[in-house]
Image 1 (cartoon, one colour):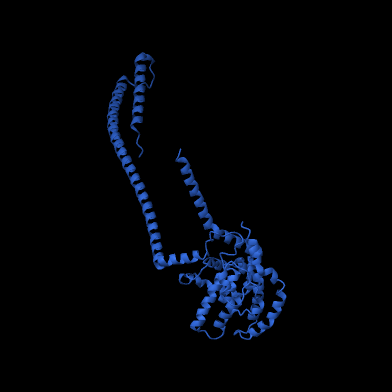
Image 2 (image 1 turned 90 degrees about the horizontal axis):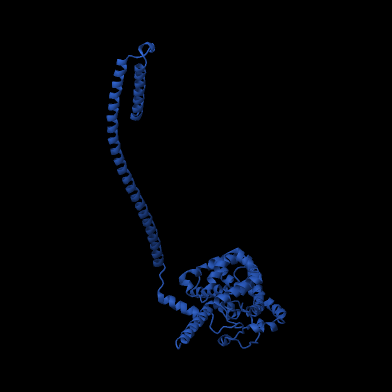
Length: 265
Length: 143
């Protein structure tokens, strides 16, 4: 049930006192003959006034008690607020700790996987150094310090080297496609390697006249070799034919490359 | 060269005789080692592209098969380790198609050469910088 607040009770009492006092004054100021019909008696009014005064005093006491209680309430509220702040700070710290722990955990997991990976693929450092020496000493991955445009050395096997390898030997290159005209090459060691002759890059211009004759002379030998192949499909035939032209056009392309790559961009 | 390699594999697989003698294995190892390193030569790749070798599914499968050279116990025999990178690129059809152009091959060749010279250039720059520094130090000393 909604109770009337003390303040309103007070105000209404004061108004009542005001009204009663006014009635009293009115009663006393007018002579007996001029009073209204329903005018209250003097005695009644004074009794009413005394009663109202008592009510006011009671309400005052109530109000002072309420004030004390209010002070206690305020104190308790302040305590509650302080505790709330403490909880908030603790919550923030907890969150920070959680973040730090999760990142630490993540990094630790990554480290563990890296360790496992490293342990699975162990290579001795000596082996690595040997390999590094091997690929660097032959200038396969780093250019020699004296390299200038026009130097035929390359970071990949040149067609000269390709033809002197066992891959080319396996393909039964007949001597007819190879001429005995070798010019001085930069790598003298390879010229002494085999009896079958190698083409140097500069030879190409003179070769162009030989192309037609050499391809013709190649045809019969390729037909013979077809019979030797285990698989009877026509692929090997085309491969052999392709291989004939390979030698010629490898020479062609090597000049292109040497002329174009001499421009050091 | 490619024909001989294919001959080897076709003999090995379709000839009905699946076992190899040790000599044959040794030879195949050598051949495949040479072939995979030849792939580092962009001019050779262009040559193969223009001959239509890249259209042959046998050849493409062979390239896929050659990826075993990436294993360390095989890779340590490679003199030109960049050929493994080219082998990877060769697995993509787009790259194989592009290689038919001579300009593509020339571009790759130029880039390879520049990269090859990179270490030397860096070293020369470093030495020059050091020489300059020592010269400056010498100049400041007498004063």
